[in-house]
Image (cartoon, chains in turn cyan, brown):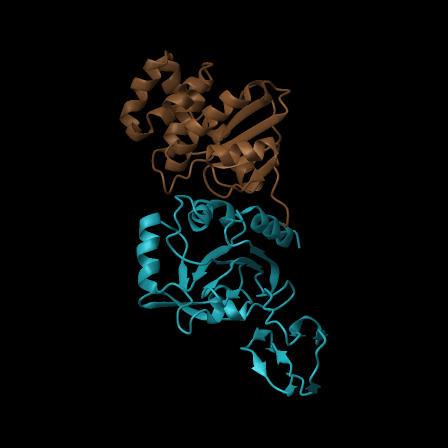
Length: 207
Length: 174
């Protein structure tokens, strides 16, 4: 039986083991062991052997979400429609380097502001952890808690590490219309820096 | 972005460099004078210089992480102002050797200690002469994929391994 990862309207739902699936265009898709791409980049059928979660690629509408940033504030991706957004998925707060990825991007806020881009950090940590971490590192960018259901947004974007229970170190640059224009998954032990983000923002601003 | 990022601004005459210009190995560090990891890397670099001698050219560029390190910028300005009087490395070394004591009040003492003209020193910092250079370093660092401090580049390619002596030596030799 095929393990299918089915995208509906661009969202990656949880795995569904099924013998037949109705896609968003109401066609029956039969069991298959072969990889097939259906409906262009919106749906990908994978082999039964592996649960291949791939990061959402450019061209796709970035899935909307709503997550807590502080104990009493929620932030939705759609709040920022009209300006570029950079989503920074990272495994966990409190990594042991003084200029870690979040601190770096916080430091580079002026450079990102030149493109009117909003940077947002997302990890599975809870809001109180984010609050303490943000204060300690004096971060100037909002951190969102992908806490309950755990890693749900990371899964939507195809960047959840099931084994570790943390998200990948992944970047998504989304344009003012909400379309993903660049994405990158870094080896989890390497801070990818900002050059890829800035190149993507520049390319976008040139049209 | 599957390979390691490269230096977007190659080493040139504008750089602060120790070692021969035609050395087979060039190690560039983007550093922050208040960062403890850069402080730890300072003796490592000294050791590498001793071991590799004429084979190594070491270049230091500024990447002050000002939000995390409130004195990083003034320290960078201090070193660059010392450079204008031909004493960059003396000040660079002093800043790292005395890193634990780094704060704005001690800067004039240190400037005096290495024999700087204090008037010129003060003017160069106040009038923003050195800020442009530090900004250039920051920009080239960002574009080159600096991902923390210290970030090292070996012959123009970002080094992502640990900053201890053995790891760096192995990477340089390979």
